[in-house]
Amino acid sequence: MSDYSQLDPCDELLVPKPAEASDALRSQVLARTKRVLRVRRWTRRFAVVLVLAACYAAGLATMHWLAPAAPAVPIYVEKAPEEPPAPQAQEPVPSPSDMEWQLLDHPNQPQQVALYREAGDRYLAEANDPESALRCYRRMLDVGSDADLAISPDDNWLLMAAKAERQKEKRDAKAN
Image 1 (cartoon, rainbow, N blue to C red):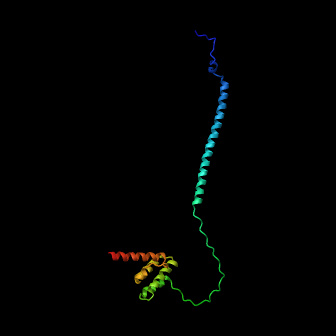
Image 2 (image 1 turned 90 degrees about the vertical axis):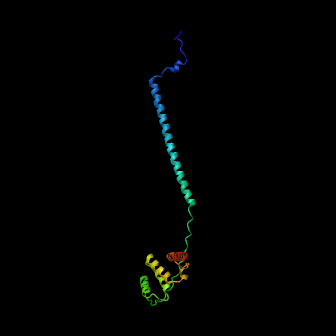
């Protein structure tokens, strides 16, 4: 029944190849595969770095476009020096604490409100002492009239806050 003399044409494909040829082929395929994988890995890394660089550049461009314009720098023209005025005998200017002590020693002075304000302004500007300035401003408001409670453009930030606080106190006192 079976005749071994006749071979099937597919038998030739099913017969194993010699070992030397398959080892050489395997090493060639492995080398090509490694090369392809290496190129793909480096291409993928390069693509990630390229995308990150593009995102960074887009962020910089966005911040450049959204940044406010630089303010115009005023140009100062230097005036020619003038002759200094002739020195006059000036009386020494009292310190803010001396002014405050003088007002405490002589409480009924005619310019008491103005002197307390000047002492507070000088504490704030010269001595950089906002606590003492606030104390002078509060005493000024204590001895002053209701017209002195009005906030004016000449007031500094601390005096405005003291006046607003005093106005609120008076409003709350009237409500109760």
